[in-house]
Every structure is written in structure tokens, then in C-alpha cells.
Image (cartoon, rainbow over all chains, first blue to last red; front, side, top):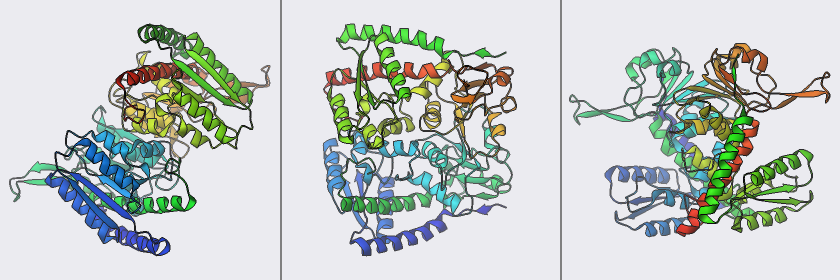
Length: 307
Length: 307
């Protein structure tokens, strides 16, 4: 039976570390890391996510601000909110919850966020610097959480063959870029497979570390995994389950019961990668606060290349 | 014996196409695509490159401007030149020749170039949009040239296993991003290997299309290539050759004579990937001229997200 890689446990440990670091940072500089969440409309799932992020920030001793606009708020109003947060010295991280209503041009909004406060790390400036191998960059949260989950469990990806199934902007592509950097958490030989890969099983069986991020329930079966592999399951899929109270249950992209029998280690769903994402958001906010504070001290401008 | 994929021939054909398109574009809009090259100092190799680019632009009917600053030009002077070119309506592509002298902060200079005129496509905004899978983006020249060389010879990478050896910012990483996009020239299953890959031969033998971009002379031997593979050689290495007049000869990253015997197709060095790079620079300049002209017409601003 595989070792279970608990993201819940690691998240708890890391959030305690982040809270300590934030307290020390505040002592030294007088600055409290500040996270602003922006929600447009009243989508229940989005409300839950935003609340979880705000609470996690507060629990880490951060300043947390929640901004909620009505679902019919015009585009320009949201732009104004972002501009205000960009200029606000109490705020170091800005998170605009997606999806946004259709009157709002989402890509313009995300581009408007100061890259130095872009704690989701989806701004092209951050993604582009990551793509060029930069290490002094805010890292996309879910991919960064996967790398931490590996490293802190003793599975250094350096020199290993990592196969990522799925090429999304949020997980697959940025994870490949993280794993290809030189240094900590990088130096892996990385393969990205996807829905257009003909013989997927042949590719996934090459993996020392297999990351399933395709968004397809139980896509990865036992015969697709090399015995002794480390399996990271990023999927969260609802499948019908009349036996359960809700009528459905959550499963990952990996057929857990089968794969657990031959993997060296595996993440559960839920409780695996999921909790790491918000933890990395907190780490990015603390990191952004550090850099913005140092930058303020050095008198650099927001237009600087290493902002 | 393998089919030889001539970049020289394809470049000639594509440059003729680009010249025709540029002439048509000028007829329709009154705008001549304009490329500015900026050289600091008198490095002989850089002088040759800049001259080749300028001549290729002229041969395609472009407006070509060459700016040369003395080797001790201060950083701020180069910034001023870039600002001037950014604002110049006759210029659609700006190329600052690397390397730059040490008093100049190269990364600041490259960031200063308007991403819409960044025909080398190394600006983080362009790299970041490419990393997110965007198709309406200027493409880095050497990787884009490799994709064209494949497509125009009937080797569509879609659904194929591509192994890239080398993870540079200029070739390996951006090529992986191009090949992972959906649509034309993309949809490949991509593996990136590098100096930290333990059993390189095992990885390269998986390749339907093998791209050698490691910068190591004749790294790829016969036993590292699957029979029938397509082999793209990006390397240009000098090795000692007392028998030759110059005392050296140029070889690629592939042991050509050996690999040619088992490959389906292979690029020569020189005359393979090399000539494609400048051709893609011309294509980017024409494309930048089209977009900047359309943007002017639509009255959008340089800060727009699709600039």
C-alpha cells in the first residue's frame, strides 16, 4: 500500500510556519502582510473560496480585506477597485476571484493587477519570467503546492522523469515550467501529455512522478502507472453516487484504490493538492509584502524589471 | 539515407512570400513594415548578425533602420533610443542585438521595448502569453522557425512525441510552449530533457521528432535516435579541425553522418535551422506592422491586453 501524501497535514504545518514568519516580518518592519480578495456577484462556490482565503489570511496574522461588488457592476468599476488596491500600501496581494460576469473583460482586469501584487501569479509578466527560468518570481499556487508536497515528503524531482497529464494554464503548463528550472524543486525531465496524446498509458508508465491534472474522473488506471511511482492527483471531479447522501462523490483523476496498490506514494482527493493551493497563496502574499517593502526602502519604482 | 530538411531553401521561399505580403500590405494601408536594429559597440560577430538582419529586411521590401552606439554608451542613452523607437510610427519591430556591454542593464533594456514591437519575442509579456497558450502572440524566432520547418515538410507535430534536448530561454523552453499549444504546429506530446537528465539516450529514443538544442557538439549519436525519427539540429559548435583551412569546422549537436543513416529526415548544420531564425524575424515584423496598424485604426491604446 502506498504512502499517503497528506496536503492537509503539510498545509497545517506550513501555515504555522508562514504565521511565524509573518509575525517576525511585522516585528522587523512594522508591516503586516495584506491580502485583498475581490468578488463580483454572489456565486455560492466563489463565495466559499473567497471566504476560505480570507480566513486563512487572518489565521496567519495577515491583514485581510474582502471587497464584494454586485453581479452587474460595470467593467470600469472593477478596474477602479484594482487600481485602488494597486496603490494601497496596506495591500500586498490582490486576488480577483474567477469566473467574472460577462460584462467584465476578465483578461483586462487580470492584466491591470500590479505584477508585484499578483499572488495568483497568472499575470503574463509573472508567467513570462517563470517561463524564462527566473527564480525570483511569484509562483502559481497549485503548481507550487505540488512541488512543496513532493519536496517536503522527500521526493526531489531533480533528475526524475515527471509526466504531467493535462496542459491547462493553471496547472499543467506552469508546473512544467517550475519543474524545468535549475535548482530547488526543478531539474526534472518533464513530459506534458494531454487529450491529443495517442498512447497515453505508454507515456504515463515512464513516470517516476506522475501528475494527473486532466480534469477527467479516474482517467489514470493501475496499468498506466509504473510500480513504485509517486502519484499526484490534481483532479476534483463529481461523479454520481446514489449510495451517498448528496447523490454524488468527489473523485480525482486517478483511480485511487487501484493505483494505491502499486504506487510508492499517492495524494488523496480531497485532502491532497487542494489545501496546498491556499497555503501557497499565503506564501506568495508574504513574499510580495517582503519584496514591496524592500523595494520601498530601496526607492525603486513599480516599473522596475525585478518588481 | 535521410531526407535533408533545408532551412536555406525554405527560408528563400518564405522570404519571397513575406516580401509579397509586405507589398500587398503596403498597397492596402500605405504602411511599410519597419525594422530597427540597435547595436552597442563593435563586436564583429554582432556586426555581422545585425547587417544580415538589416539586409534581409531590405530584401523583403521593409523599411530598415540601423542604430549603432559606441561601446561605452551609458545605459540611459540606450533607454532613450528604445523609447524613441517605441514611439516611432515608422518602426514596427525593434531588435536590440545581444550581448550588451556590462555598463548596460540588459534585462531593463529588453523590458523597455514595447511588447507590440518585440519581434525577438523575449519580453516577459510575450513569453507569458505564449506560456498561457495564446495564439495571437509574436513567436520567438528560432522555435517558430523549427515549427515551420516541420510543418512545411509535412511533419505535423500534432499527436507526435517530441523530445527537446536543452532548456534554454531562447530555444528549449519556448519551443516546448509552442508545441504544447492547441492548433497549428501544436498538440504534440512534449518532453524536455537537459544536462541533469540521467539516461538521456533512453529519453531521446522515445522521440518521433527529436530536437537537439543543448549546445554540445555531436551529443546525439546514432544509438540515441529511434529509426525513422525526424531530427532537428539547433546546435552550432566549433570543433578543432587541423585539416581545414581555418583550423576548425562547424558541427551541430547531432553526429550527422551516423544519425543520417537511420533518421527519416534531418536538418544540416549549417543550412538547417539557422536561416529560419531571420526569416521568422521578418514574419514577426510584418505581423507587428499589421497589428499596430489595425490598432491605430481601432483607436486602442498601447496598454491594451491584446496589444
